[in-house]
Amino acid sequence: QVQLEESGGGMAQAGGSLRLSCVASTRAFKTTAMGWFRQAPGKEREFVATSNWSDSNRYYADAVKGRFTFSRDNAKSTIYLQMDSLRPEDTAVYYCAADPMNYCSGGGCTVATEYGYWGQGTQVTVSS
Image (cartoon, rainbow, N blue to C red; front, side, top):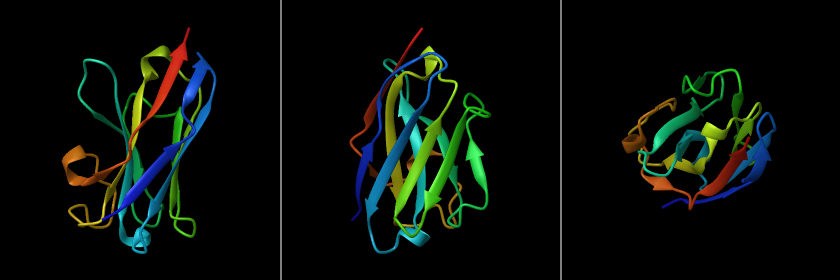
């Protein structure tokens, strides 16, 4: 139903920055919950950041609060994740997620099962 394409992953040194982008191919983007999740080797996929539909309220995992910034641009059907002060433990595959089915009505959901569509993932590797 929705195609998602992430970009911006790569390698960074500890303390460095990266910005991820995810473009969604849906006319209903403005009423589609969007979020970022990540998965490190041997671990479950975990919530990273999201916001409500209008981007007026943002939500973050405790591990990234103060370092990462979520934003969504409804005019561009794109969400972003600005990652600053990167740490080696941020190393993971980062996934863009969308909920066109509105299990997460209004946006702001932090549970992976609320999102039905996922991008292919983009690798983020942080070295010390």
